[in-house]
Image (cartoon, rainbow, N blue to C red; front, top):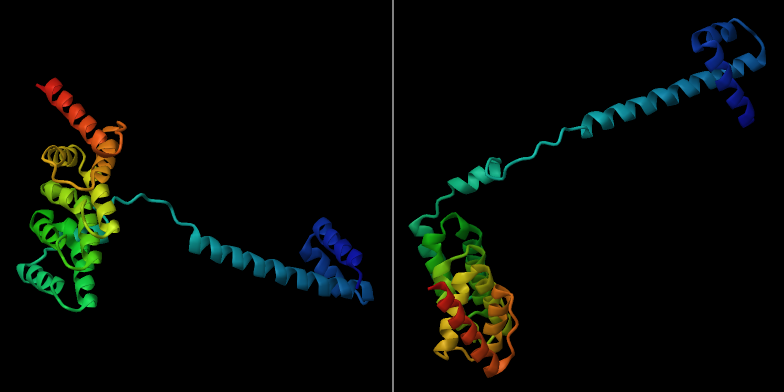
Length: 236
């Protein structure tokens, strides 16, 4: 059947009304009218199927957007109620000293996952972890100390700037930057006492915190200390 006949049938239905057309076609014996009946039925089935699909999609996906405060979500409330027991902390510290790397890393990932729930109690555990023999444990510990903004870690992080593993050293810079003024003070005190071999790493942290540029090396160290002295003088 040519497409033109199909289109003509649709126009015919729209103009006369589907119910009236069906009645006329069913009471007629003309072949053209019988063909129209067949096409009307097919067309109606297609329309009904399309409407059903659209209705299902709309019902399934049309949901109002409701902003959820993470603290009010079920996950957030569960996190708030999570209490890290003393037994769990002791277990994690023992596992961090395990001879098996898989056990050490598993404990470190678990510790990092719960550290934000109780930073005051878990911060010291992370501090001890930055002296772990495993560089991955040291890296993750340094990362999390900055993540929870554990201010007491600043002096220890300046020591980590001299870590034998470059990745751990770079992460110490990132965490000192996250600590802001507390990190800057620790860096400047370490530079003043000449306790840092990785001077450029310390200067990088100072530059990112202060927004000032310092020359690399010993000259930069002197420039940073002069800047720090001026800031302290202005603050008095």
